[in-house]
Image 1 (cartoon, rainbow, N blue to C red):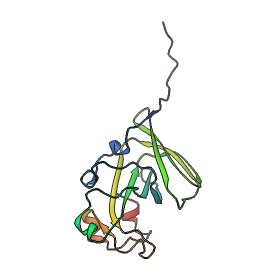
Image 2 (cartoon, rainbow, N blue to C red):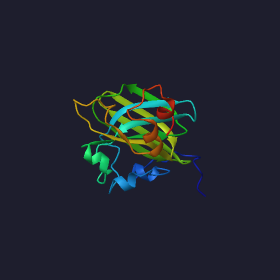
Image 3 (cartoon, one colour):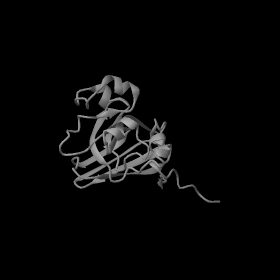
Image 4 (cartoon, rainbow, N blue to C red):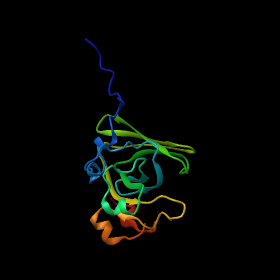
Length: 179
């Protein structure tokens, strides 16, 4: 008779981060294939005591295949989303937000948990969280040296579109602390 060695942590790489989303909130309509979270620009991440949670604001590396007409007319080239990681634990941060791209990687753990790692030049972040991710605050803008990031932005979710015409200040808790 074999003896049990007790509980063990099994790490399995996930297929695609979009498979972890509770809702795709229109990403599947914008993209023929939702891009990975590799080589994305990390604009900010917000640590929230509610949950506890992390909300990362990222510019995806690939612009949508099927952007809204008003985005195409304004020659937009960047799609930004907020990704929410709930029930966050075991946070380790080394470095600071880099100016270059970062890669998000996910490994499945026992009990519907994920080990999440964010790596870029000068930045290493790792934490565990729930295996259900949320997204929100999807916006489109033209990324160029002559146009500030906050101007010319189109918010693709109806509530955000009614509330904002430019990127909100970081003190706007309903934008940065919730999705």
